[in-house]
Length: 598
Image 1 (tube, rainbow, N blue to C red):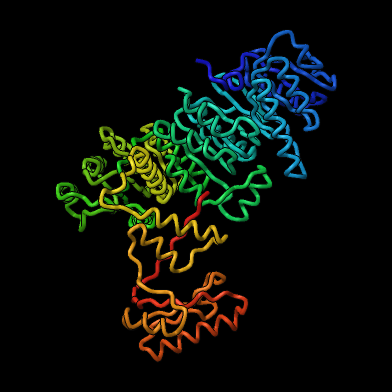
Image 2: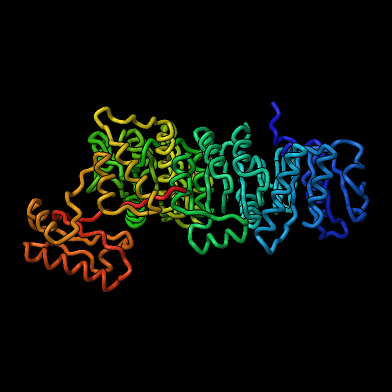
């Protein structure tokens, strides 16, 4: 069944609309990249200015092309692209990618332009990528519909990027590392096709095993999370979200024209949707590689084998500091290790192998660890004394993990002496990292991903039968505050709301005069706390409105007078509703809970 985006990403024919006046002109670059990549479909060129790209067949308008084309690549100035989009719609073009980079000094004008674009898309049933997109690539179809002169290698990773610079950098790195892609897409300003659409399309693509996303901002947040949740169970979605800091968020606004948003909200939403979040480009590919090569861990308990104490300690520190656990070996495993390592003083995790080790013994150690039910994954760290030893241990590790259904990670440290070892590990489908911390980080992020997927399948528990909140009381409290146009509950209302849901609160009473306060304190028993009550004061302690550990009646009368006078002195316009008196409770800590609805 044909997907609605197939005419955009799988065209049989296309037209480039742009400037072809010289070799550096945008239209000329796009046609050159299409030809160099070897696209087998028909390529047409439209030059509104009438300038031809060399000897290519040229048309002055889309309507003059003798056949209907699937895709239009528009690489002209912002003043003209709206006119060309409408012309493509009238000509029956199925998909459009706007590769122009329009600059709008006014954000409101930019948003109006994008609304106009979206209206045209709906009118003519078009799907549009951009504006401000660097284009896209479909390597298996030899389609390079972008400004990048380098063509991605074919593979099973899909890359979506809101930044053309990030996309180009990753592309350059991937070619050197022989990493292949099913699709590479610059999402641009997303006036029509957004990241949710792309996830939906790539999630249904049989040639895509994992989706990598560089994200700065989202416009259709719910659609994005819904699409991610639908496909993250089957295909990992790894997101590098920029704009975490206040300053970075401001930069993202100027770059994409959309607010970056509260980072804590993004973090929670990503986890609830089964998305793996990373902080660096290196992590983006580390996790993609590990997921492609290794089974997923059941949990976050890691076994570590090292031939040097220092690297093992660093790996352990990073594991424990980031929510992981060292595997506690079973008695059976410890006994096997003691047999294999009779000279060792301690056969607990991490296993520190001093000096040279026989490869056959190393294989047996690996097998013993991976058989242990308490082990969810294994990290092998190796600091070579010579290249031959590193190669032998790498081969022993490959042999040891052959029948295990648990992930194995390696950190063959160094450079020149371990190059051959790294190639052996790659051939054995074992990911290798230059530093132990990178390996541990990858393991932990995948373990968290597995846990997040488990949460997606869990059904939230129903309300307990014996829990019967007083919803009517809670609604009444909220309604009363809203009727008075207040956004903060007073002390009595807040405690009433908590009580309505069965949460224990400290007993107290609102007192309009000092005699009522004295009577309340007698009923509660000393010591007590005295607090001023005013709808105009959110933080009572800042105006001297709280006195704690009041021990007797004399101290109570003094405290009552003190909090009232303090408020009158510091905030004479504030309304005083009375004084709250409650039992003094000594607790070792204070808990503040904050929530935000995004």
